[in-house]
Amino acid sequence: MPTKPTTVLDARALDRTLRRMADQIIELNAGCENLVIVGIQRRGVQLAERIVRIIEAQEGVTVASGALDITLYRDDLQTVGPRPVVGATSLPWTLDDQRVVIVDDVLYTGRTIRAALDELADFGRPARIALAVLVDRGGRELPIHADIVGRRIDVASDQRVDVMIEELDGRDEVVVATRDEEG
Amino acid sequence: MPGPLGKDLLGLAPLSADQIRLVLDTAVPFREISERTIKKVPTLRGATIVNLFFEASTRTRISFEFAEKRLSADTVNVAAAGSSVSKGETLVDTARNLEAMKIDMVVIRHSASGAARFLAERIESNVINAGDGTNEHPTQGLLDMLTLRDRFGDLAGRKICIVGDVLHSRVARSNIWGLTKLGAEVAVCGPRSLLPNAIEEMGVTVFDRIEQAIEWADALNVLRLQLERMQAGYIPSLREYNRVFGVTSARLEQAPRDLLILHPGPMNRGVEIDSDVADGPHSVILDQVTNGVAVRMAVLYLLAGGKPELAEAAKKGNA
Image (cartoon, rainbow over all chains, first blue to last red; front, side, top):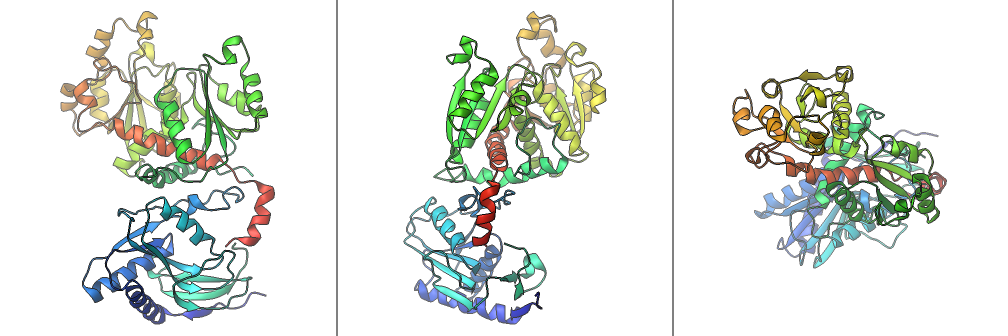
């Protein structure tokens, strides 16, 4: 039975959450030195950009950031039907000995992060890779966990978490909705 | 399950404008892979691709091979010379034998028009046409279009003139099909002996004088003048061809705007194009080569279809 989507985070709560995540990233890395923040396409990229702006405003430093598209590293390319759209990857920094923080919107099975780790390894050998996600919805299929979590929610497998952000969707909101056929 | 381009890429004539745009859009992110320290992604791991070249080719074969290797496919190169083709084996027998060794894709270059289609209808593997006779060379057409799009943005309304031996050119045909589908205006210019009869029916304008073409166009795609054409009597001499149809800086200076200069290679410097034009500021000839690898990666990616029977099982697990 389709139910009405429930709002988990509204615009103000989302902003507060990102600010807290930015603080935690600085804490985790004991400062901003050698920090590289990498957003995963698509919405992780915009969330990463916002976190970078918060850190830069707060600490008065410039933070290296990039975008990662993991499509070509997916483990289901041999089985998915229509070819998924490939987005842009932009990592103009060396990752060797850097402290990388991956930013994504929703952590679910962990397969995206597995692909991201493989892809990052092809770019260099960071000193450390951490994971920061806006929402952790559980349901892992791989031994992967997030170091920094904006909001942890229990979501049934027939439901989906939609993260909407101003830049792409016209508004900031996180909702839980019934999954129709979205996979 | 056929991919967004179907099973094969045989030409640009059978593709829709949306399919062409999809290839061009997909090629853009693939360019970045060739800039990485490790120029490789695991996308086609486990796929075996045979490059079946019955005709000489350096650029296209190497470009396909780079594209395949950068997607982690396993590749085998078969050249006509030194294979059982030289012992008289037919095209279909060669391909069926290769298929019996469990391959996934064939990239074919052949001197006979229609060879790629002939093969595609007879084998299960995906077939990519890397040039068949005077018919089509779709990946060249796509890389030309990507190069033009990089500079022009939208191609609609842009004026592209193809200069030279249009009669024998599969590059010209793929360009005409592709460019007109994306709304560009296309013209051809060359000696009448080297323009196909009724070329106007493909929706192109014909210029008899290179000066007219230069005045009209936003970009010139200068074709290689195959030197054999002179012996065959299509043109009086290479020197005369250069004098009448050569793209020279003196001629380009007369143009009302800066023209983009494309050439599919290999160039005959001093015949169809002068060196100072080929190496000049408006030449995008090397961009074409770079884009060639990206376009071929995009085509390989889009054709390498998922297995439908496994798709259902996978659907349950993945978000």
